[in-house]
Length: 268
Image (cartoon, rainbow, N blue to C red; front, side, top):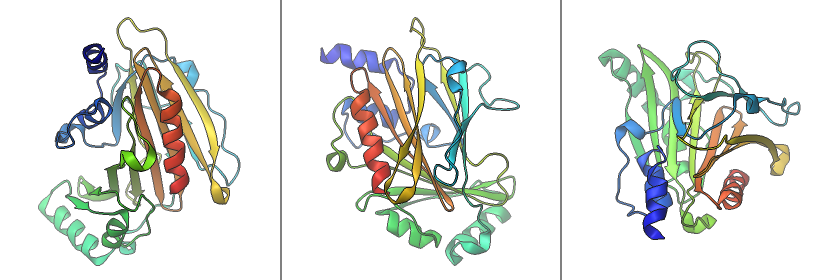
């Protein structure tokens, strides 16, 4: 049973850090640079484009939309793709801390793409950036200042949630990302997601729901299922930050994965 479990999950083309967590591999297994969070993702799941029909968010409550990808696609071979669009405020460089401003100017002068930092808590990350952030108190977070073609376009944050705090079990995972966009970011404020057909898999389902949160906010939750399991993504737009809570799960763990994502969103 253990062998079959690992072989089946091995067919899912997910980032190594997600695969390791769901399979219960040692924590010291580091994710390669190529699997770090990027503005465009590739997931494994069979899906139907018609499932991308989207209902608009309630006015001034849910500030995230799921849209079709328009124009040239980063991954034209994907069977299904969608664009996340968050109603968040673009930031000016002057709003960030002096440390960030200095580093950005240095990156631009040197022609670099940016630099990554690691902090013990989201509060420490927010202090470094000079902005207010929400996240689990004891969660380590990586921060990347994204400079592209001489322009500071975005700040990305990501981290692995402590499974014991939220009841993560074998066959599931839980992660939290966040993005802050600047005035130089082009296009919708959010990531593009690409879904590939799993060979021999039946058509998967993509469902979208609105999840009310304490305080009058509402998040957008997208669940994708296929023969291996699937993934759950929860998107929350708050002022200048777009949060993404997500869980990759194996067959039979969808309900738990959705509960994990909702619990994390409620804590933000």
